[in-house]
Image 1 (tube, rainbow, N blue to C red):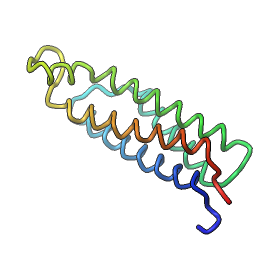
Image 2: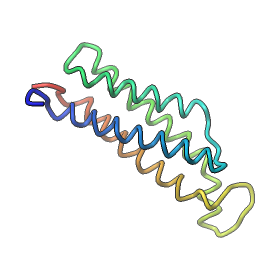
Image 3: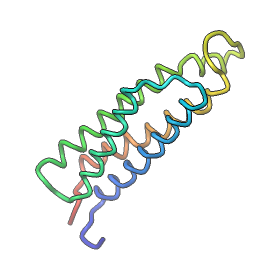
Image 4: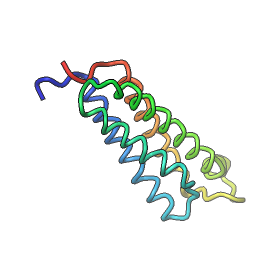
Length: 130
C-alpha cells in the first residue's frame, strides 16, 4: 500500500460504488422496476475496467479508466431513462404508467452512479502508483 497513489484509491472508490450501483439495480429489478440488460452489462464492464486499474501504471490502464467512466455514464442514462416515469409520478402525486414507490431507488441509483463516474474520471487523470 506504500507505493499506491491517489489514482489507485479513486479506482477502489469507483469499483465499490459500481458494485453498490449494481446491487441497487438488481434489487430495483426484483421489486418490479424496469432494468435494461445493457445497463447491467455496462456496470459489469465498468467494474472490470476499474479492477484492471488496480494493477498500477500500465499502458492500457488509461484506456480502461476511460472505458469505465463511459460505461458508468451509459448505465446512468439507462437508469434515469427507464425510471423517469417513477420519479415524475412521485413528484406529481399521480399514478399512471410508473411505480412511484420506486422513485427513491431510482434517485439513489442515479446519485451513487454519478459519484462513481466522478471517481472514475478522477482516476483517469491521476497516477495509480508512486
